[in-house]
Length: 268
Image 1: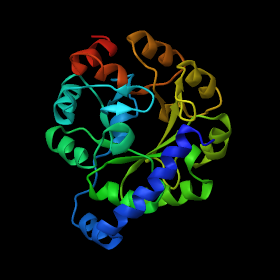
Image 2 (image 1 turned 30 degrees about the vertical axis):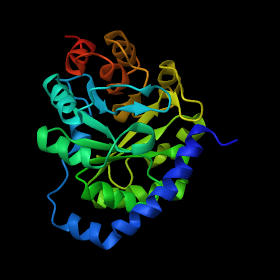
Image 3 (image 1 turned 135 degrees about the vertical axis):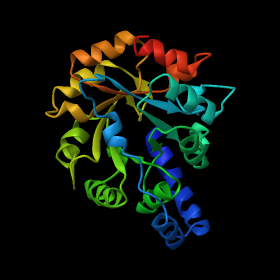
Image 4 (image 1 turned 120 degrees about the horizontal axis):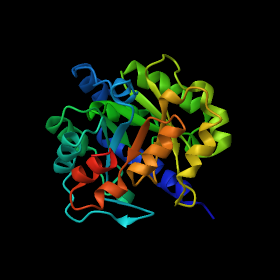
């Protein structure tokens, strides 16, 4: 039986082929040529001495593992609250079927806040990278578990040509070994390495997964811990392992005021 990730990817392949009919590559390329450069997502989140922990705050309405997360879902209002609470960047789910997202959210968020925005979706085709750039995204997610090594290299080259930061995400140790040397390719300053504490095959989450994986990583400056982060203490534990970038969403979105929840998580 296919696991959860395989089911999503199979659906996404069909979905992308349909979307291509409505937005041919040439139209996306024409739009991109007239757009200003993306905001620098990498620079926004790679830590410095003044800000030891950077939070990528996520916006999503629901997920396969959690179901409906937030009833009064307004992506622009949430983004503004995150910005006021000190988020370094925004992650926006654009998958509609499983996460209640929409590609239009990216442009609406960018108009409302000055933070760079990551398009978080399941990239299975280079066309989606052009689509992401045309929609105003500043960064894209590449999930190692659903891409070949050659796809990852090709997508990284295209993303950098378009000025997009790449969040290259892994969960399995095997995937980490397979892609670790590609972080920073083809140019340093465009790639982040995400460790997803949620197993996308089973949808179970374990924060300690980052602690185990990070011991295998030489440059921890670009590591992003994703999923299962709920408290200031969780962030402190990650700091002890030299992880200075976190991606947080579900916990914040379940609170009455996501911005206040973010302030508390950041230590006040």
